[in-house]
Length: 193
Image 1 (tube, rainbow, N blue to C red):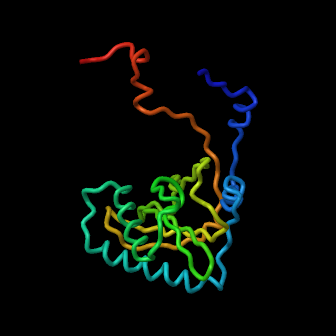
Image 2 (image 1 turned 60 degrees about the vertical axis):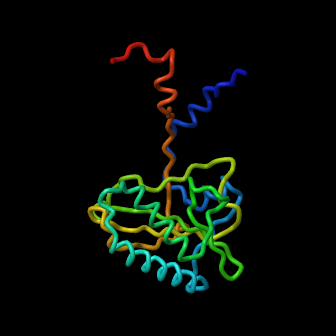
């Protein structure tokens, strides 16, 4: 079965830079669900996330993560935080945004866990990604929170709680291929040994 290739207009749209788009707008446009900014009414949930994050931090300070990659450390912190919040994995899918869903007082909260190096907190390095997919994990209007754990030389030293309704994102279009495609028979013209 042959696939229809995208027309020239598609590529013209891809080449335009898209910056400073509210993340809440992106979520609404790609999932149909609103991002609800945190307010004083959410204080108990913010306090709960803070307390759980502090407990995760206290445990992480006693662990040696030096042999792990940052992504592996982040996955462990995410699992610990999900357990402490008694949250669930949205749509039972571990990959993709967001990591955790909790419901409190009839309201849904999505929690994303990230790990950032202390000396790079002010850098322009891209560390937050959202990929719109057909089977999105966001299934209801909700507040979106990020717990950004901070590390220094893979030792977890702190965290920041972020209201994701307050951030802006940019779109970086890219085409990619995996190794299976790159090294497939017919594409490799010479190899050694």
